[in-house]
Amino acid sequence: MTDYLEDFASTAGPAALPPLGLTWGLKRSFISYLSRLPDRAVSATRGASVIESSLFNFSPDGGTFDPQTGLGTMRFRGDVRLSGHYGMMFVHIADPWIEFAADHATFSIAKTQGLGSENPRLPLAMLDVAAPTPAGGSYVWDGLPIALAPEGTSIFDDQYPAGQPMDPLFIRYPDPARG
Image (cartoon, rainbow, N blue to C red; front, side, top):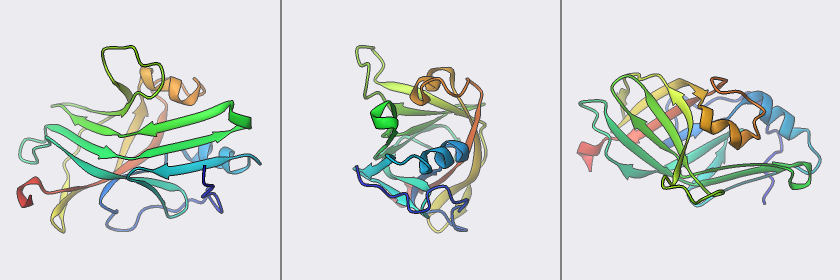
């Protein structure tokens, strides 16, 4: 894995208009801990990138989100892997989706381990529904608070309980009407 952690524990936040896609810093305390490990490794591939030294950005990948109703699914692509403790700590976030319902939204990721379930996605976190801001031919959600879903605790080796607040999400999603 490529190590992007020159100053990975910084408190940098996204610029006024976040990059296109989903931008997330996971959890500051986790990133700070990881940055101190001598064998830390971080990679961002297949549409994911590390920005501002401590945030991950996932590229838009279609979906069914309807800005008029606020319902549907936003799909993003990318593969982020973080590891330490000689492989005993491993976090893998792949191809996130945000599924908007009337009163909440679910942040899910592709299951990459423990397949064998009829559902290939794992609910990672829950979000409150918020209205986006139109900006530059896209819709922007700035700093959406999220909390770890019960199923998502396993991604962090059960170190964080269900309901644990995580770092906020920043989303800049292309306006579907502009095709």
